[in-house]
Length: 338
Image (cartoon, rainbow, N blue to C red; front, top):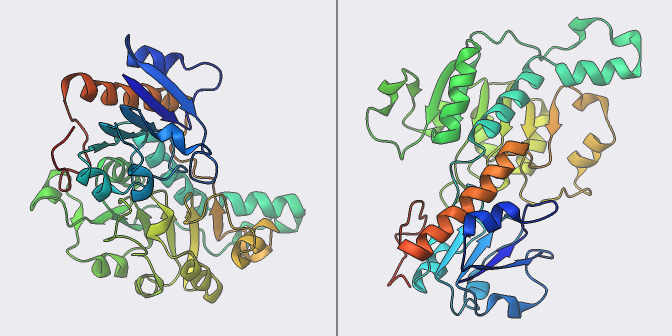
């Protein structure tokens, strides 16, 4: 078997990948440039593709070049950059790796929330400038955590892990997830909302934990942000395309949105020409307590990287050898699997 591994995550040698693949597998490692491979010939003649990062995209025109491919594996949870329909129509199942980094992303979402709700970053920034900021009362966005109404969009693996953490701080957890079965809320006792609008209207803190697809793309737009209580906090550790960044910028400037903690963006790396990003990079004081940006790093720990390297290869080779599909994300499109 020949597997094309795009944007591998190893630092020195691919020992984890080789061990997980086992004997009789040829691994071909390539790095992408601006979302694609420099040599299109690399896509031909491979039995499978392991796409290790979302920076490399797999639209229909690339999938058409996978003439011998039997499976596409995406390292990680999100797969919005893969054309699921095009793959399915060619008989190629797409699998992901949902069981890595769950606790890391949940921890990161909570960390961003705490930093904003307690003013941790803002106090640090202001104290660096001078002792004039010694008066803690200068920050008006700092809140008592107990009683904060947190709303989660999506209650899958990561959303559930985040909800448990928020609850431990005494926050009142509510969620919106139309894909969960009736009565699911009884498992935890958290408040379930039938509409996104209803959740938004009661959320002092909104944390995003859903997939990016046509249903959720720019779901959190200007209209949605306007439904939040004045001074609410937004945290996104899911996918940048779920949130309209321009709308966030406008809502921060108007004062309606109290603060935002963002780990993901529609354009990655950051668009340094964007006015809000320029203001943030320049350290403008009005953003001290109101904006934290991190570089799509919520998933990361040394342990999670080892997990994703091992699990993504394991699931891929398992399918190639036995036909077992554990995490298929395009079954609705799959025609005559190879």
